[in-house]
Image (cartoon, rainbow, N blue to C red; front, side, top):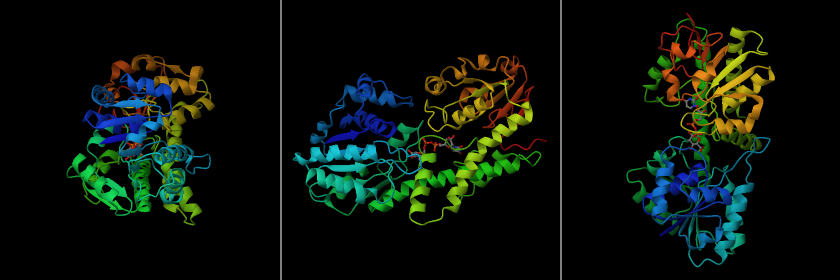
Length: 436
Ligand code: UGA
């Protein structure tokens, strides 16, 4: 059996790496020639733990990487993993997936096989039936369910644990009618992920499950962030003890209750906006989802207000930002709250120096020489008047008085409560911690 993966971003390349390292005959396809050239040498275009290891293993086996879409003609399964970014008004931008689907449709025309096309890209409910299926049928002159299979297969992997999540997903969702294609898909996933629940449903429900998942995660984060703001007003209150305790209630669950600067990344903010936009167009008032977004936006203001509380006017103040990646173990800064924070601080004419173990190069692409970049945390802190910890990189947990010693003013704003247990000779403020 041959597998094609169209779109080599986080989802596509992780899938390619995992399947090919297991020995599946895989062809990874991307329109970006330069990206393909890099991947062929076993190098990932972005940092993701364990990804390159699997990629190199796959390349030694049967893996092929190409920008030539006609290679999907020989595939039995085609996974579509291209991006679905957002338009200016928050709605979903389907132009990339439409183009990819068109090309797949054209190649289906001459194809003697009856492949199954799995759509992993996040798309708003109705997209499969109203947009993707008609394009495929028109371009191929063939019928879905008869000449080829079309299955919604949303993805739940997280960046920074993408390989583990691809190998061991918590669920597999397959959306389509009960056809021979669905039977074949089910057998494939049962073999690939034994003991993992497989949910078979229709396209619309599968599409909505993805939004339900991400919007619920965003809701949990905004909930704990709002509570953390209340805690800051209660002397001695600690949000982590509260999160840990309520998380023991099986009805709540312990994950995604880490208070911080708000959710960022390429998925939660975008998917929240797309869902709100879709719901509003459908005539649904999204009171709760709007509030989740509002809390998230205001969290950034909280950080600025804490900084002003300590430094007064921020013009010319030297501020260090630790971590610009939207979370640890990635170099991804898309929709990172730290990037938003730097933009706001620059507007207030603060002088910014940053440190990040992996995301410096990406950060340079945004700010160029408007800010300074430090190779070590110590350099980043030297003569600084305030440090804001934004990303919970493990190495920041080790910070101690030695590192803070050369700061001009020893003000630490810890958005992730990483140093809460340390005896530090600094003026320490943390999100979710009530000052005694
Ligand atoms: C998210 C979902 O978690 C995945 O299940 C989903 O597949 C993916 O989007 C997607 O749609 O592709 P990801 O964007 O990799 O994954 O990042 P998360 O781990 O969800 O983190 C998102 C943001 O929330 C980060 O800024 C993180 O720092 C923040 N966060 C997360 C918190 O502030 N507190 C928490 O307790 C958890």
